[in-house]
Image (cartoon, rainbow, N blue to C red; front, side):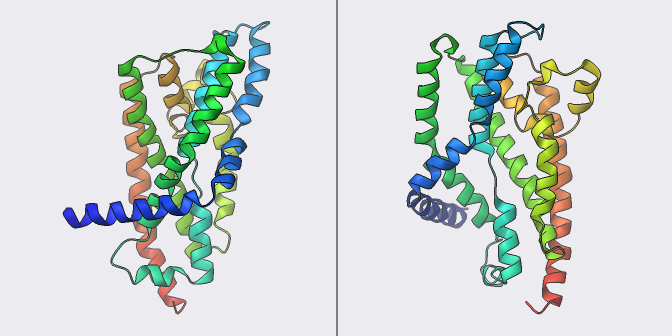
Length: 262
């Protein structure tokens, strides 16, 4: 256990220092997640004339929460892993007594800490422009949000890393992620909260992993009613499915990679 903690600490500080070398790029990446703010303008105007069950302030808070969640669960492992496989760089990682996934996972976690000041600054700017939208979640709700956002990031990472393993057979596994992103964009709650969906559609969507990547944690943060118990069970269920699939693809993929002379 002590050895594992030492390895984790070394990786975390190493990748954090690496991420700090690209502060300007991190700021641009943080800004690139501003789509919720654009959609917020559309929905706050629509709320003044439509009956959606949410008012303009609710929409403003929701899309701010969506922005925060997206900053935490952004993942790019599929492009890194695809590059390692195509260029043969994975061979060096396989020689180490550590599963290569931990390099990717820790680099993502380190990037979150390096990105945090920029996200905090953008949130303050939002409240300066829309002071009527300011709110403070209760301590219990905030702690629940922290727990859920960690689970959300882990699920998002696991899903994309599972797709990344198809790089053992496909030259462009990232095409799977691009197709997945189209569905993710509409069903996760990025473009609109699930409260505006028709009830039958919403009920079906809630059994998919998509709303738990954005809508669920965002709703907890701003206080929208959600079934926490059911949502956590669905998240854990999908995590188990993708974990089993991931491990099977990894074992089969290593056989494929070895047969190519790596």
